[in-house]
Length: 196
Image 1 (cartoon, rainbow, N blue to C red):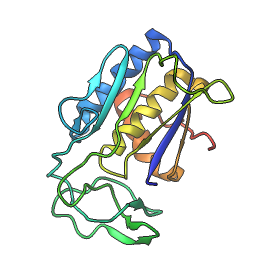
Image 2: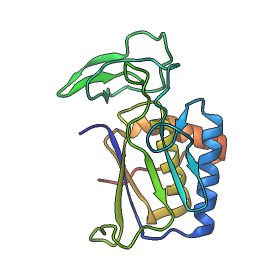
Image 3: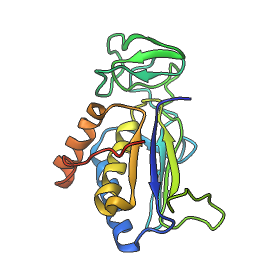
Image 4: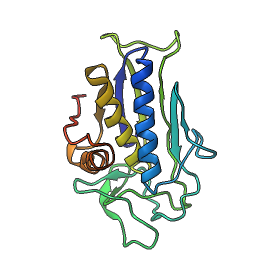
């Protein structure tokens, strides 16, 4: 349970397109002032020819810290709250607070689950009925969520219908990521979520 993005993908992704997608994800990382880390929230994110893997940083002290149980964005949620911001909880849902913007845990931990996109999956990976493989990334609406959204927009741009992206959020909560991709990369405004 928790705020999550999902994608379906083929077993192998074209090597040249994958490299272009990873390079664009790295460009977003270089522009956004959001600290990313390796899979466990420490070390460095991976942007290689065969793998992209990152999480939010365990040390994200510069962002607004809130103890909100299992958080969920409210219908108007947007942005990333920096330390010292006003209260960022607009109400409650069954498991925690409804957030007005992305924030980190009360201890400054900005990590949740890593986004991991491999160019080629392993033979033992489970296959969906339509020939695609199911993957997801639970971000708990932490600041790195914006990077995850941008990367999924990027992969959808390069791989089209071979990648299907869906989410727990509403379409309006992807406008910032679309704007960032459009501004930095020259595409993204036409990104559409697929149905779950």
